[in-house]
Length: 166
Image 1: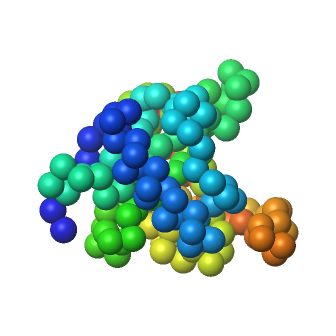
Image 2: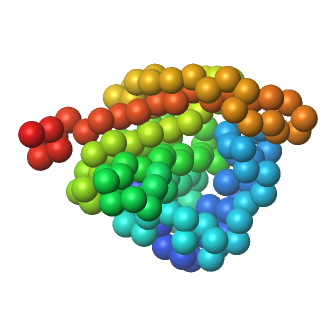
């Protein structure tokens, strides 16, 4: 599939929102039950690390980072979100978005990326592993969703850039 990856703009939000809703409906992408409004979403995500994949000028996937803490010692640690439209899954969009997000994050001083992934989301786990993430933990029954306890695999990627590993 031929597509480009660019910085997300506010004008991309409606399609990003739709893709996020598709992910929520799978039941295996997030603990979120509803997509927040743009104002809440944008406040929660780092402004410089938001990407979209576009095919023929239509958003088919997105990736973004959230800070894990407001404490300054964690300024280089962020949580990853990657979502791909149902119509574009399985052709490498998620992997390319995650690779681009990794590059962008390192430019912005992020040295550790983390992800919490449901064990049932095999495709997401595989993409993260392919992009250098490793499993660092397992949280059993960490949250209840639709009356069912859910487990989460914690994954992490540490930058290999020398500036972060002195």
